[in-house]
Image 1 (cartoon, rainbow, N blue to C red):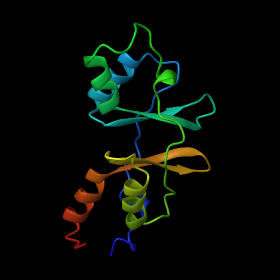
Image 2: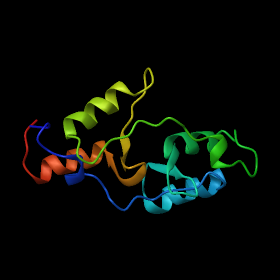
Image 3: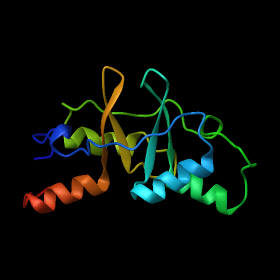
Image 4: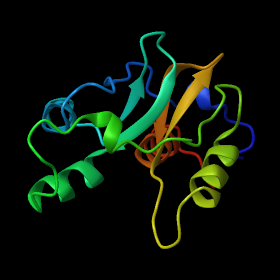
Length: 137
């Protein structure tokens, strides 16, 4: 069933993003304001060059690991797993599992078309879609 549902049916299209030169404290503030768990990092050409997560930023801010003025570029994760909008939910779940570092979880993946962010899909998006459409796994 998951193989029949395309990412573009489930993904969030209004993606909140950040820039590499933004300070981490402002990126974290943006995450909290928009109630999202990750921000794709875009360069001047609008290409995704990385991602920052609420978990990483919040944890390190609480532990005071960042110096004043620390930029997103110095803490973002590069070489981010991503999806094409025409891939399936099955592909998304597999990518979330197979690209997670040992002992961690990837719960959101950017959706790219021609290198540009066109959406983001999270585990919450998948669960919400399945519940709203009375789908069984």
